[in-house]
Image 1 (cartoon, rainbow, N blue to C red):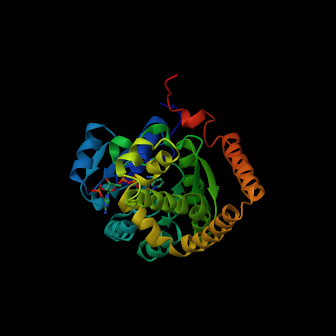
Image 2: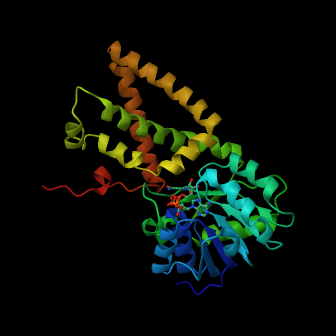
Image 3: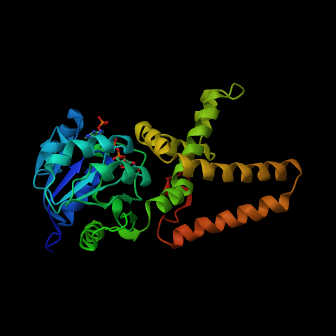
Length: 308
Ligand code: NAP
């Protein structure tokens, strides 16, 4: 536990799942708030959060959780954000900061802006950190350590509120970057959203194949397929909402992806080994740069144990 003074008085987290519970844990461990409240519509998740002692108070309605809060973090699926924002509007105190952790930013900014009362600062955010698991038990305090948190303040945002939110995420262990919501959505479309779509697609295709039995797909999964299944096990509600809310950027990146895939198809058909070798050398270098940037470890096969 850090001895430093907290940045935030009361922190209200709406949605105590993987990300919300990790924010609660990290805020507690790092002394980033004096008081934490959690709201969740799932009675089961709320009682798990209570058992895990993640907060000081637990609420079945978001409105109950936000009373007196200095910082409100919406950690629900992107599609649920407007409903939550409308529900809490009357309970927000003047000067409070309302933010979120949603994986898409433009639609959140657009839908929340008219719902946030005057005198309350809306600054959407996205911690680029997570796992394929869901729920309060899946969270952990170190999730944000050394990972980027992207804040997307609308034009004219209060600089002091932005500083406070940046300081909060820094205290949780994140590195903070600031960009427009549109730019965020374009970047994340290629680094996160399209890769998830590809994983969902390849696992779905393998499952549908009739020439390879399903048991063989499972049995020989170590050959690359297994890594796609981890991503394709991600939360269906969350990812449905990502694709519905980042439609334009995803379709733009998917178009580029399809063109490049066609070029690869051609290289294979015409036996163009140089084209394949050049691309594979370049992609290997990108993996090295991710490791050098501290965004992943260099253990072979992601550090999975192997019997000798
Ligand atoms: P999660 O583990 O499923 O947690 C979401 C929680 O919110 C669940 O307990 C859910 O209850 C609850 N909830 C749903 N609607 C609600 C409402 N209207 N009011 C209050 N609680 C509600 O999901 P997550 O992975 O933490 O994702 C939360 C947000 O973080 C999403 O916007 C996602 O885009 C973003 N994000 C996720 C990741 C990741 O890797 N998972 C990374 C960065 C950002 P039910 O289970 O009953 O629906």
